Length: 168
Image 1 (cartoon, one colour):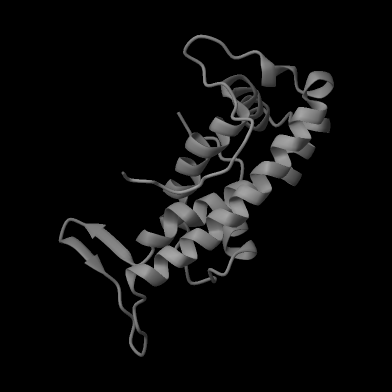
Image 2 (cartoon, rainbow, N blue to C red):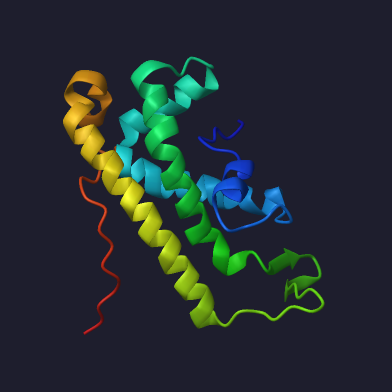
């Protein structure tokens, strides 16, 4: 079965600091992971499945289309970068795992990459909170699936504040 994606790799390239030289095939797993983990967590299973079904059936319209285009796409773009940044310079193949290092370039340190990841996470959380606010204001009238999750289904998060890890 084909994977249904809410955004395309070109969206990530166009709306982030990545450039056109990024192999779009490298972005696909991170788009899918961001969508399955982060967007489903924010929407809950029922609304998430409804959107996937509408996209697959080319019937996405009205409030649902607004939700995807205005709110979900920016979230996915930035969460994709959160997941992808640590791995974009890494290649995993039959020959092993190695880091690509173009001529006349200096690889970033882990701290520098982590800083970029946190900037993308901040952007993703900003857009996530905007969507949560929008859904809390409009869900009862326009998105009934938002409140209908039960049992093994994922209920939506009503807040997207990641405060980091605290080890004691």
